[in-house]
Amino acid sequence: MYVANGTGVLKKVLLSRPTYLKPAPINEIAKKWEHTVMDVKIMEKEHQLLVQAYEQNGVEVVQLPADEERPNAVFARDFGGCVKEGYILGNFKLPLRYKEHTDYEKIMEELGVPVIARVTEGLFEGGDFAFLRENLIAVGMADRTNEKGVEEIRTQLAPYGYRVIGVPLNPAYLHFDMCFNLVDDHLAVAYIEGLPEKFRKELTKLDIELIGVPEQAIFDHGCNLQAIGDHRVISLARNTAVNDALAKHGMKVIELPVTEILKAGGGPHCMTFPLKRER
Image 1 (cartoon, rainbow, N blue to C red):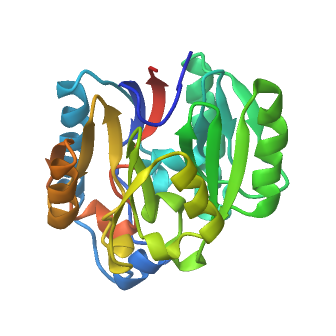
Image 2 (tube, rainbow, N blue to C red):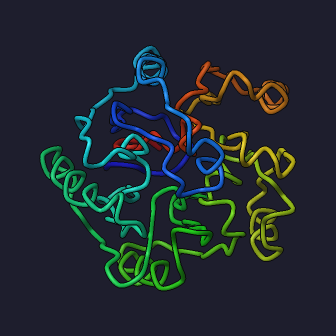
Image 3 (cartoon, helix red, strand yellow):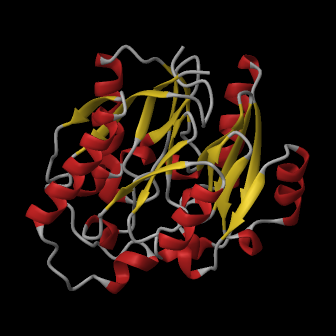
């Protein structure tokens, strides 16, 4: 078993260092920093803090070496999605990220995680992939994943017993994990008004309570949180309102003072590809 759900105890993750990361103008956040030179030393330190947070909480960290030909590979989440039986290999929209297809597929093979589905005709990036329940997966459709990609995932995962639902979103939100994140079995952080009514009804049926944030929180990484199980979640230190709300809901919040990496448009959730998560 690899990844059983989205909120069980996280045991192993795949990351990649931000050595060559630059604010390429490929999303609304990075466009604001397009002419900024990002501080590599700060980014490396921030990434190491994420590694330490995982290791201190019993999570094994595997890293794909950085490569200047794939500068955005630090956002390891995006190459696909992992389930119990193996993983789905995505299909990037932008040429800037094409080399990640090859390199992440190679390291997954080395790790012994099989490909059980591939998106080849449509588009799919892992920032749009979210477990709601063990056999229920939501896939956002904002800027980098389209309906054809969701249909390919649905068709290939159906034999394994998964139900896959597509969630249309404003393209400006980039990925699903920028505006919605399940942090515990029955708790999520979201920009509620940005979610389709049909999806909100699905969450109600699943008895998932939503901690609401304003739309600006999307661009401040207020929803880009990483659940690690046992009511624990990794967040940004600057997410004060969200972190306070999570604590009031009984969550242990592990706060990271990450700011530099965020300029490229991704936070802790974006930087993490789960490899093993228990029930």
